[in-house]
Image 1 (tube, rainbow, N blue to C red):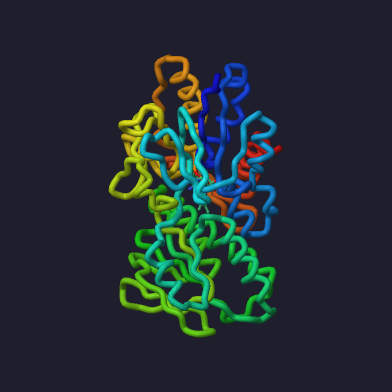
Image 2: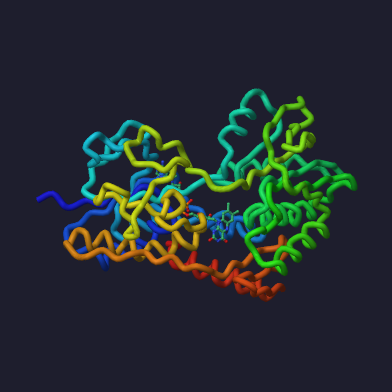
Length: 381
Ligand SMILES: Cc1cc2nc3c(=O)[nH]c(=O)nc-3n(C[C@H](O)[C@H](O)[C@H](O)COP(=O)(O)OP(=O)(O)OC[C@H]3O[C@@H](n4cnc5c(N)ncnc54)[C@H](O)[C@@H]3O)c2cc1C
């Protein structure tokens, strides 16, 4: 008899937990699990600022998906999902191959909202305008930028987006550049539609502003990036909503999360913003054999696009895949209202934020390092 097949699309934070639990939940029941993802390395973005700052090596924050699958008894298939077939029982990949399934789950993530800006850039620009995700092209461009620097040179680096990702990456880049003997006129800019770290308490926001000012950042608050123009060998000119223009050699986009790819035409139901709507049991609305988790899913009560939710959905998804196959009642995912955020400050210091709680110091960085390393140890093979 053909085994029941679960197809996991995307090596995101929730799916790696389903893979880890495979033997315990499905291994002896004739259930086959297949993971399809475009790259063998799955990035743990909590450690990305540390990689950019030079505190971690790339392999310390990449989960080796083929190794994790091999160790767990899951089949690994490198490829990129494009669409479902008409009967919604097979997935079509970018290379044209087709993978059949009985149940499927989508955990394909998000990327900073940037599609229009990136297409403007491809019209002949020579500078670098990069979304913070996916991480492989970002890290390659960052290393190229660093390799092209000579001591005493002046450059302009701009970060667009003042949320945690933009804030952390801005200070991480600043920290790394200090080792390259930047020239006296090196410029740092941070452009943000809302106040920096706007979703945090006033103590965190004030400490954040101070950290950026000490690093020499000029902040442009209440404005957004509307366009980008190449200026020959001189990098790019960024056009801002307040009418000003900013010359920039390296521009990082940390704008709010958008779907990682345009899923229109995939036969998955989508919200107006292009995310996959799910029920409390993480099933795709209207399709009980399909599940979606992490950033790509739109939960009934809106939740932040944060890795912490994807991680917590992992065990619920694993349980519900097992429950639906066994005909048991499905569990509801109950999102936690508040969670602790540990925000790095470039050097080995960090801030802790939860509600009105504020703490700062090198011990917070060590605490974060311990949590991050513990997470990686669970999945590194
Ligand atoms: C700099 C930075 C720092 C952050 N720090 C934190 C933090 O400290 N805490 C926190 O909670 N959140 C943080 N976030 C947010 C966090 O990164 C995301 O919320 C989290 O990664 C979402 O996880 P996910 O499982 O949805 O997807 P991801 O972890 O992004 O995984 C998606 C996977 O799907 C694969 N994939 C993509 N397209 C396809 C396709 N078509 N077919 C098959 N596979 C596909 C990808 O290759 C990837 O393996 C940070 C984000 C950034 C940018």
